[in-house]
Image 1 (cartoon, rainbow, N blue to C red):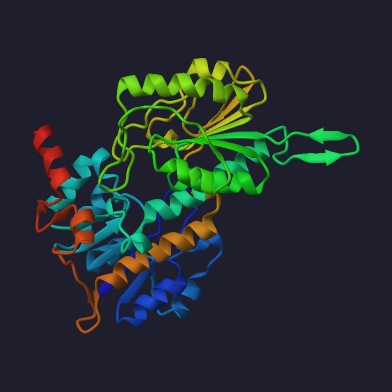
Image 2: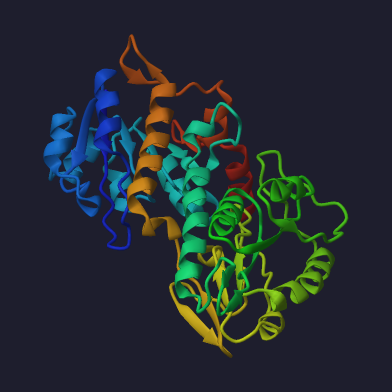
Length: 380
């Protein structure tokens, strides 16, 4: 079976979809792996290292795509790339399907079986393939390091002959994978950390990391069957904002991590809440790619608003591309090996498997994912 690993063309992408160590594992399974020339350049891995792992290095992306049975990459393919894939090929990458419905339809029309990495179920057996969690973990770490670097204070308390320096106060909104890592990192740096999440079970997680939960009674909240936070009602949002306004005013750093998969991020920190913050304080909006949690944030920018700095840099995991590449590569490798038939030496789409059912969008010329079928039906 022929596998092709694509090098992403965008200059903003610093990560590598698959590293030589994982390429070697797939080669040992009997896969014929081809990688695009310069695929590891961003993290200083030469083409020779991929060759030593058993891969073929090519400059002919168009030909490699046409011949591949399985395409592995990081981001969304272009339309002309889909047209160049052979019918029956399997394409695996981040697809952001609810915001790219035309792409999903084009993938079905091309006869390509499209697997969306974001749609992999958050189950125990699928944890090793969970790209969203692995990348969010690193983004949570980077958010705190970025805030510490931009802050004009230090995070830890210091007792010196000249006096005592109080610890920075960090308020983290949203305690999923990114938020938990942000809490842990801020605590390691010595900050006083408060955190909030709409899910009741998050209170115990916050406490377990040594932080203080901000308790707000929002009534019934909960999460989806896939482990994502449910979208709040307008009334719940108003209650939440009122309770958090005071906490933001007390904080030196506010980090927002609240995302709703497939939808615009909820607005959490308003202009009024920012006005309550002291000059010199800082906000990191980790949901800026999907509309932002902070009213004043701007995608790809640092905004100064009345002395408060709002950082809206996207894809923070790209700032640590070596571990981000290691994790993404491992996730991809685990996905392929989990569904690899060792005797036939090929990747098998087991339509009865719950992981495949969760992440397979298109197959045999049709959109097969139930949620995407509903979206298409509504749009038509």
